[in-house]
Image (tube, rainbow over all chains, first blue to last red; front, side, top):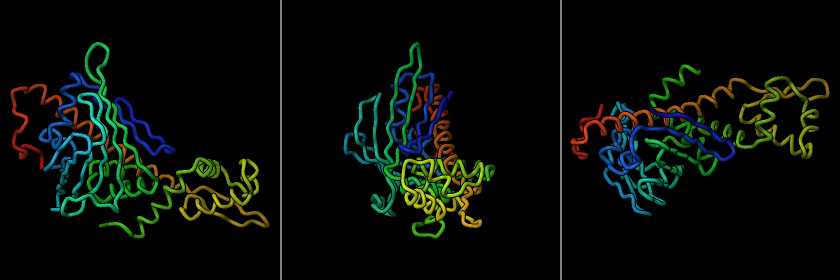
Length: 160
Length: 127
């Protein structure tokens, strides 16, 4: 399975995560393209996501809401920048207000996805998450402490 | 909205401070040993004032502390703050590793049960 490598680049403000799967690219692509599959993994178990809109054409919007354990919600959006199924997908990911509209005061992440067939069989998937400024990065990281990333928070308690 | 809290402003300063290679280098070096500003200034291809400015940014972010000894200003790295920064980045990285871990599980389930319709009810998710 899964994550074979992750690297952080402080200067470029990116995190790159690479994973390998024993499934063909088309099947890996489905997990991004099919909202019913997507919502089974996008949010953590304690903050599952529901996608109400999912348009993977260039310029297309996706909207989702993550529901927290104590009734809290965290709405978000995607905007497709470029797409070439089943190999390439680039989209912006941001936070939304209560009505689901993108919140312009909140940071936006650029996520670039590459899905390649491995020699032999299987698929390598590379996800690059980029922040446009260190201020944006800080904000997302600190917000992660307060919502949404409960699984990661367990690990953080251990570090602290 | 959580924006604007004191804690968040503190983190803002922190990551801004670490977004510069010279400043990261100063933090690394002053964690190993105290250095005077004069010493540090000698090692970077920039003016004393520029190095002083970098140190001021680091000090506001609580990544270093300054202490006067005689005529010297000594700079020391603050390990607690560096740890906290690492923890934030670790948490973000861990959240993506977790996410791709779930991705793999869904992929395996989807591959096993090809006959399962892709628009299965969402209640099947864990709560």
